[in-house]
Amino acid sequence: MIASTITTLETRRLMLRPLTLDDAPAIQATFPQWEIVRFLAGHVPWPYPHDGAESFLRDVALPGMARGEEWHWSLRPKSEPERLIGVISLMARENNNRGFWIAPDWQGQGLMSEAAAAVTDFWFDVLGRDVLRAPKAVENIASRRISERSGMRMIGTHIHSFVSGEHPAEMWEITAAEWRAQRGTR
Ligand SMILES: CC(C)(COP(=O)(O)OP(=O)(O)OC[C@H]1O[C@@H](n2cnc3c(N)ncnc32)[C@H](O)[C@@H]1OP(=O)(O)O)[C@@H](O)C(=O)NCCC(=O)NCCS
Image (cartoon, rainbow, N blue to C red; front, side, top):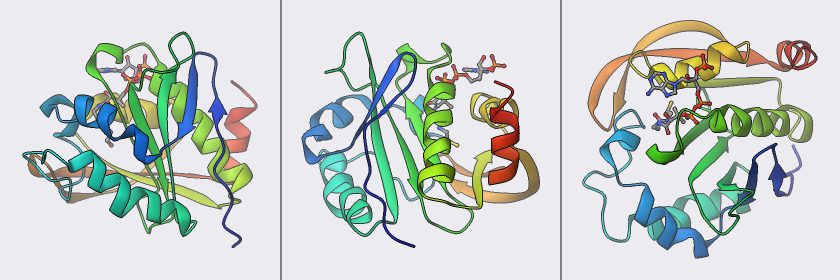
């Protein structure tokens, strides 16, 4: 596959801007909160180091984007575009293609549902992928709701390592055809 260039995306209320090294201070100031990290993958370092955001960007996210294997965006309210309130990512990895977090003050307003729809369009329409899969903790109700409401199917359960330890997890999946069919209805 030809690596597609990441572009800025727009939803009704958000700008999704490709991550850069300049985002390190805002991520460092917002991300290290237990409420955000507890159901993220166990490889996220915790306690979060003082240079955690910078090393994530420099060593993981930006090289992954340069290789055309990862696509990461900051979430910014259109009303306040200089403010980073979360991150959403796509990864060309087996069984783990999308991840996201949003600051607690901004949760519960449907914002991640908007962002997830925009990057899922990018996954299928721009990157031309056939299927999107995402594991999530059974206890992570908000994340599961995003999957349920966007027409994803739960295809299996397993034990997964999260920052908060090993927990039952579900694998959620949607194909390009299923995504396009349900997108026509929203
Ligand atoms: C998961 C997360 C990104 C959801 O973001 P959000 O912007 O609050 O999501 P939305 O507002 O679009 O809500 C999605 C659904 O979850 C529900 N929801 C949101 N917060 C909830 C909570 N704390 N408890 C239960 N349900 C919740 C919403 O009501 C909505 O359901 P609905 O569609 O039936 O109305 C956010 O909670 C988060 O950043 N969590 C920490 C990081 C994380 O766990 N990421 C996912 C890893 S798989």
